[in-house]
Length: 305
Picture 1 (cartoon, rainbow, N blue to C red):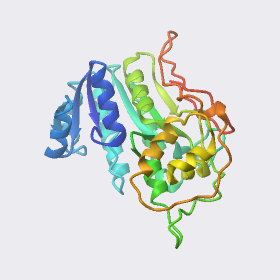
Picture 2 (picture 1 turned 90 degrees about the vertical axis):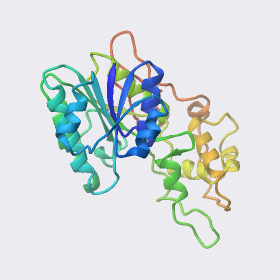
Picture 3 (picture 1 turned 30 degrees about the horizontal axis):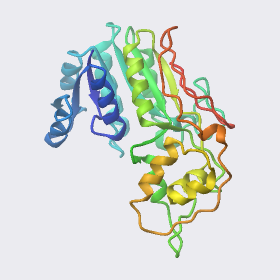
Picture 4 (picture 1 turned 60 degrees about the vertical axis):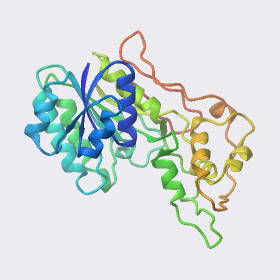
C-alpha cells in the first residue's frame, strides 16, 4: 500500500513508520521541516514538507495514497485545530473511495473508569473534551473506512510518556520521588511496538473499521510503575520472575539518572501478569479482529478491531 503518515518523527509515529516499511509498504511522511524530512528519508520514507493546516496541500498528498494514518500531536493549544484540519483533508480525499483513514486517540476520553470497553460512555476531562466530536466525523464519513485507535499510555525502547512523567515527578528534600496519588490507581498501558503492529493490521484489513482500544491488559498500579522507574533494584524486590517489557524499559531509563530514589514499596506483581511478554496484536483468520493478552486484575483494556 501507499500510505500517507503524519507524526512520523514522533514516538508512536516513528514506530508505525518502521512497522509499515518493514512490511513492504510505501510511506509518504508528512513533516514540518527539512530536519524531519532528512530523518524520515534516512529511514526509507518519502518526505513531504507540508503545513498540516493547509487543506489543499494535504489533500493533494493523501489523494495519491491508498490510505492514511494520523499521529501528529503538537502537544499544545493547537491540538484540536490540527486534528480537525487533518480529518477535513482525509474526508475530502477518501470519502466515497472506501480507502482507510486511521486516527489516533487516547484512553483519557473515557475519564476515570475501572472497566473500559469500546462501548463505555465518554467522560473526557476538559483537556481532551474536543476529541470525541472530531473522531465521530471520522467514523461517520461516507464510504471511507474510518478507524479510531484509542491508545493506552505507550512505553518502550527507553522512551514514552510513562517513564518521562514518573521521573519528572516532584521530589522531596532527599531526592526521593513523590508518588502520584496513593499509588493504588491503575493505568492502562501498551508497548509501542504492539501499538504500531495494530495500526498496520487495521490499515491492511478491509473489514477493520470503528473505534478500538489498544492496551496490553497489564494495567499496573502507579506504585508499581514508580518503583520500576526508581531503580533496577526496586524491580528485583517486586517479584523473582522475569520482568515484563514494561519493567525492563523503565529499568533502562532509570539508569540515566544518578539520584537515590526510593518510592514506597508497592504490592507484589502477580507472576501470571509478568511472567511473559504481553501478547502482540495479531490478525485472526476470521477477519480484522485483533486481541491482546487478557487483563490480570480489575480494570481491563482490550484490542478488538
